[in-house]
Length: 430
Image (cartoon, rainbow, N blue to C red):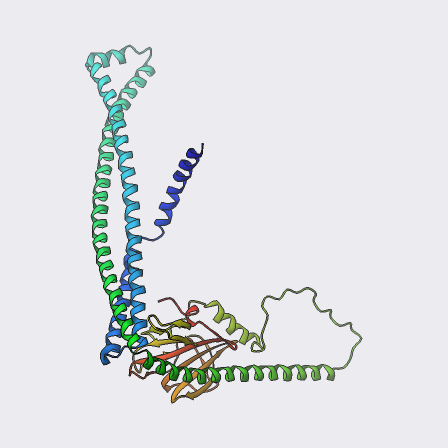
């Protein structure tokens, strides 16, 4: 009984598995693989540009790690293609078996009609069949029957030929599936070899980093001091915005109370306050008006869908704490360090109001308020906006500067009020 249940479960799951594999077409998988390959090529170019000074850096390590992740994504994509092709092969084999059985059945039926026709092949038998009719109407019916029988035989032949053609097409498709699978497996083997080479490259690079660990520690300490200054500046901006919002709300409440007090009193009963009104969203001090709340909600609803602040972007350091492989060092980032092209346009990721423009360690910085959310763009060489200005999504706010190695770079930071959050949770996946 247990075995029967397992067999029934297996038979039930096979169609479901086939449907899940059909969720992505071969064309979609190919398109995605080409996109990932282009990203790998961009990472390779960025890595080559950074490594021109021959000094191992954390930025290079992050690019190598990103390249490995993309290479694994390519291999996963190929594995999905193999599963899709296997599914097609399975379906085609089933259909070929079904068509072969159908042809055998059709031939068997046709053979019986031929045998019957052979036994009753003389014209005398046919005429005798017609002339032995009991009435004229019966004779007409018998003639009609003979015509239908002849048509039935012709249809049988046509059906057999049609089924044979369908079978031949299925066999040809199956052959193409097998050929396609062979080609994909060759590509899979090629990508696996490249992956192994890149793993060796990473291992060698980690050893280089380990040899200059003390130097890196000093570089990271200097970077951390700059980030701490930036963190304090952003926290100060948020506090100032919250205080301003509270002051404005208090002034508005006082003015409303004064206006109500100045109104002539009437004997009309006061309108009762609505009871048990559900609160859809708890507002914060920064969301003092419906318009500001709309911007906050819009920012929230675009989670994982915001555009990147630069068109050419490679993450060289992610958000939060991360141990540097092969060393005792720990990197801690308040935002997202993005390698890019020097002088490229830096754009606002969402609509908002420029809260502050300031300098941190000689680099221009812009902080934009989006309701209760804030985005900060650090290491700009030029600023195209002014404090208090309304900006739109995609509007250019400045140009990207360079880091200590002379490579294009910006730091992108996202705050939910005073809390620093991972920017990649809000940006579109690359």
